[in-house]
Length: 208
Image (cartoon, rainbow, N blue to C red; front, side):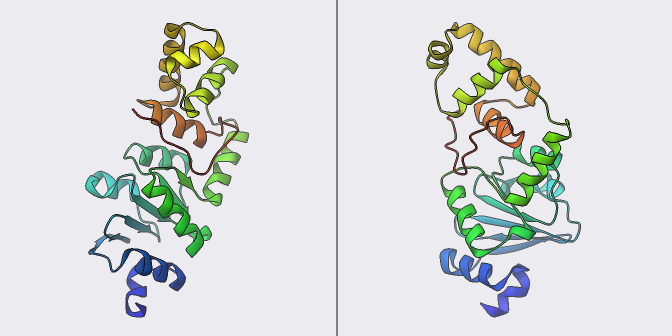
């Protein structure tokens, strides 16, 4: 395992966790300065020293899915939004990387939940305070909050005393504002834009 540590470019404790949990990688791919470690059931992308993970996943879409963890030096809110379009759900800033964080992210992967490490979340909070994040109306916030709680259109309509058609209209407007295509995208965008105030680490994803 020690001989593999330089290939991983990870702290020894993280290498130990990966090997203990998933065994040896079945493949290791390189793309410029980025390393892709493919294990049985999970993929880890390590992007440091100026690597471009967006270019990587656009050229190698097969490696980008809900069971992929991205470890990166710096990641802007815009970059995360673009990566979410490839269904990546787990993002770890290299400053936050520990075996415990990696373990939490891997659990999120296997339950298809969103995981964002604290440094990246902090960037989003700063961006929200600067006014660069889209704002929603009170009613739109109510609708997206109920969507995140897995309520159906009929249930949301009943909860808010609206017609199902009105709820659908709000949903379509939200998708346009947040530039997403379905309920999963709405919930992820809401969290990343600091709109759903009761952020839960392991968010149960909605069925499209």
